[in-house]
Image (cartoon, rainbow, N blue to C red):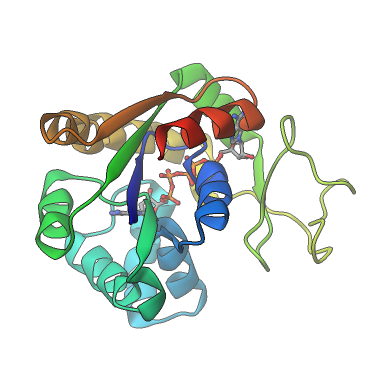
Length: 209
Ligand code: AP5
């Protein structure tokens, strides 16, 4: 069974690698960021409550995140394994997850702050299909347009410098303590997330039996 968590600072490449690994293992890629942004785009009450927190780079309150993730984890496709990307983000979330399911591995992404800022400032996303690009490391074939559906690419509102600074601070204060939490439980598998996306894919793959 593959019950995997990807842990790491914003822009470390978790989403990029999660999409690859989940496809290869045949398990769903569950990103709380994607679920929250989809709820906000659909103007649901939960999404509207989350939106200001996301745009400012703060964590969305635990009760909202636990509700949206709980509903997703309960769907049949997650029974045979899952890859959690961006959850848990603090100790209460890790404890809540532990009450619901055991885990098999927690892969932690290690990359320098300067590289994170570079990756985030160059990230562009498709608002239609959520594909992720990068002006330097993964440019679209036609400038400014999604390869899959031709939609104009946009910058995420929380990839602007003020929000990035908040996200890095939130990561250091609230999420980084989870490294020790999972190390103590024998689940932590650190990965060097520097280098090209393909190099990182090979390193991640070697950590998952
Ligand atoms: P979320 O969407 O989870 O954002 P994040 O954790 O900050 O992570 P990112 O999506 O920014 O980065 P990533 O590591 O996935 O990098 P990516 O692969 O895209 O959360 C957003 C917000 O939602 C939070 O701030 C919070 O408000 C809320 N939220 C979400 N979960 C929550 C929770 N559990 N509790 C409370 N609130 C929650 O890569 C980044 C860029 O780099 C891309 O352009 C990519 O193409 C490029 N790239 C990737 N790999 C490489 C490489 N090896 N070399 C060069 N470029 C690369």
